[in-house]
Length: 228
Image (cartoon, rainbow, N blue to C red; front, top):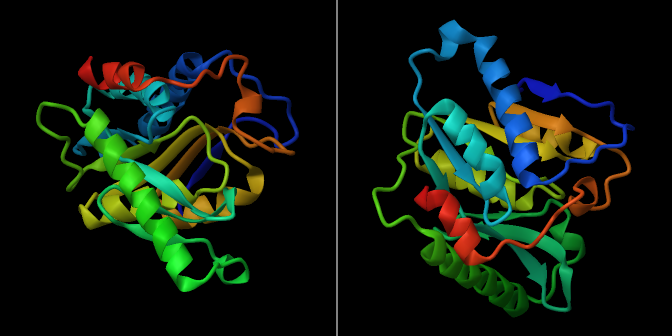
């Protein structure tokens, strides 16, 4: 089981000014976590991966603090055809799929969920092409990979991204985000080697309610973080 870092009481009122400030705070906590285990990680190479688009403003300060590459890994929720808000799984642009544990209770007919899977993967592939850096890609093999998003609601896209990074032979995977629901923590611990979450408020409802400013990022804004 991975170490778990939480820095707010589960019932506390949490409100980040914006993604940039949340990312800077998360970067400080990541550095503090690394400093607690210097002998274990001093020889390790770090790579930061963001889940776009909202994860990029969070991930950029972490990559700067670690002086390491920043890249993206794109994963999209697979949703029921009759309910676009209900996730039954997730898929990455490179085809790694996870299904929700309770999917059998809400699964549409086979041809419909296959269609939903293909739709999500097509969407993921398109976004990956839009954001893919023009230069060399980061190499997660043998590295400590920090997988970052602006918040974690269900963990489905995070789980698919973790599966992809395991396939690329990452040495360790750390899940990092400003906020996540407390009841998701056991699942995130099982997924990764370390979990660094700034706050686990309850009730949760949605990621956006914990930010004063939470604009939708354009493709150009998201890509600018990778270009810099």
